[in-house]
Length: 78
Image 1 (tube, rainbow, N blue to C red):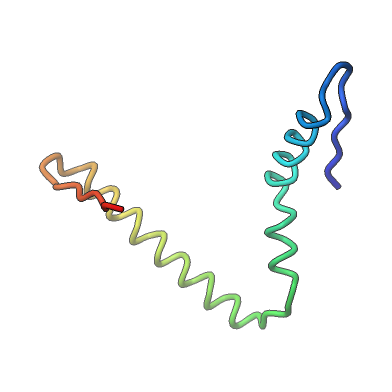
Image 2 (tube, rainbow, N blue to C red):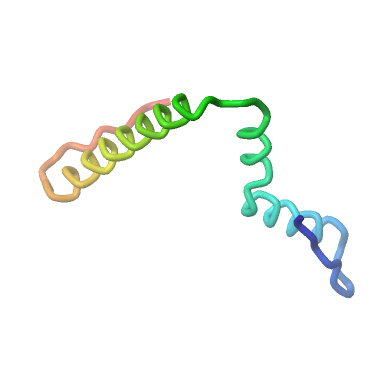
């Protein structure tokens, strides 16, 4: 459980901001979302493999850009 002690002469807004940061770092919301419904172990393994493949492809692209100084970096326009 995430707790924050309000310090002396500290505003409530400041303490609330610290609480939010601790809460986010602790992964409370992420854990709540994952436990919101049952996921079969086989589906979970499949999803983890997909994430690993995406992560490896992204890291390979980044490495290729770092190793090739002439590589053109495209910026997306919004």
